Length: 168
Image (cartoon, rainbow, N blue to C red; front, top):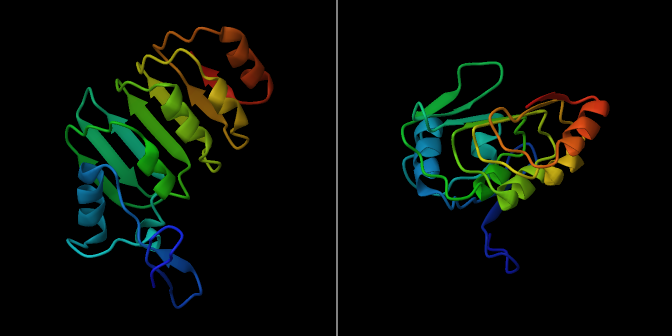
C-alpha cells in the first residue's frame, strides 16, 4: 500500500509486523544486502534484514561485514565508499559498529547517536574530534576511539564514570 505521508509502500506480514520498503542511499551497501538476503531485484523490506546487528567497516583492509552476532550471517564488501552513515538507521537491531580508517564527522556521530540499541562503537583512526553526540547512547558499554584526536578528553572521563569502557 502507498502511504501518502512518506510515499513508502507498507504491508503487514503474517506475524503482524509492519513491513516497509526501504531505500538505501548507498547503492553499494544495498547491492551487498541484496546478495545476503538473496533478493537480486524488487523491493527490500525492513523485515528482510532484521537479524543483522553488526556492521564492520575497515577501509585499510578493504573489508565490510554485516553479520548476526551469533551465527554465520555475514556480508563482505571490498572498498566501500560510505559518504554518510544514514543507512545505518535501517538496521533497528544494530548493537555494534566497528569502523577503521574512514573519515567520521560530527553529523555521522549524530546519526550513530540515534541508534539506541548500540552497545559497542569502535572508531579507530577516524579523525574524530568531538564525541559529545554519543553521550545520549544509554546502552553503550564499549567505546573505542583509538588513534583519534579527540579534543575534549574530560567528556571521555565522564562517559567512563558512567560505566562505559573507553579506549583512547
